[in-house]
Length: 337
Ligand code: EPU
Image (cartoon, rainbow, N blue to C red; front, side, top):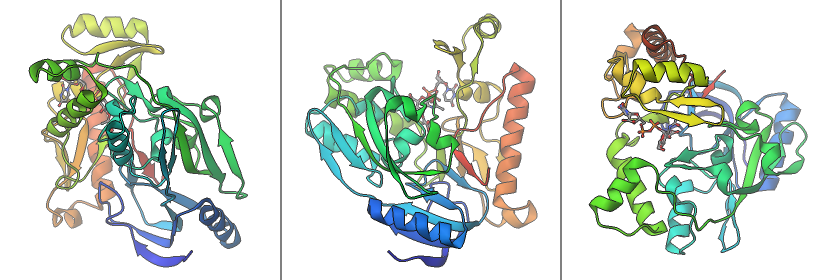
């Protein structure tokens, strides 16, 4: 495997933040990942693992080694599926649906690679990765050891896991199980099936999720973005009840940890759609998405891209806190943190 110097990362993330990697390598096997771990240890530099780049905000150049995770492999079977971390997530979901293997269709069109799926415990339309998870393998970047993790060891939470909290690991493969259950309760999915007179099935849910996502979320090819930019805030039962009394029409769902409110609704109601700081703005299409589509020339007058983004994040957080008393938390990984 080659270790390259001063490589541009401008096109490596879906938000397309400008950044350079001091060192860069592309790992296509567990052995490559282990070699990268040794290289970084010998040079005494940190490793930043890069997957599909759809949930990563690069706020600066990376002084260490960027390890592009390209570990391949896609075995889809009726009892379990094993995916290399560098496989595209949606390609896997599409192949599973074609093979009539159910359980993943609600997670269609989630951008990014398989390795990132457990990292942020991806979820959509009533299903989370942890619902289909058996185990994963990851290399400990401090000593090169390959370790198998069961669900408990992954410490899954809402858009969270051990691997989101710690940079010590590079996930190399994940093992998932299918499911025959049809998850339809998300309102947009059921109404899509009714409208198109489709029977509930894995394939039709896949169609519904793909169409609903395409209509709701801005396409990162034309409007660079990092998906949902804020987590849906979870407040105590007491505060949730009080919130619902004050805002009777607002979405609020009882969750195992309290009441989950809708960050998109809060941002939208605060009138922040279209709010702009330099190159960045709150999407007019979906309030939870920040798009980087402004004129690049504005960057010089208003600080670096990252400064503009941070100003926008702060303005959104401040306004939502002022109007609703709710603190928003950023969802993607921000580098450096
Ligand atoms: N809404 C608004 N204004 C908007 C957009 C939405 O008021 O501009 C309201 C909607 O009317 C709805 C509520 O907000 O009542 C929720 O919106 P939506 O159904 O689009 O889902 P979300 O809560 O914004 C979450 C996930 C998405 C996932 C969808 C579908 C998080 C942070 N986001 O979004 O995941 O696809 O549910 O299950 O949990 C991601 O994590 O990157 C992501 C896209």
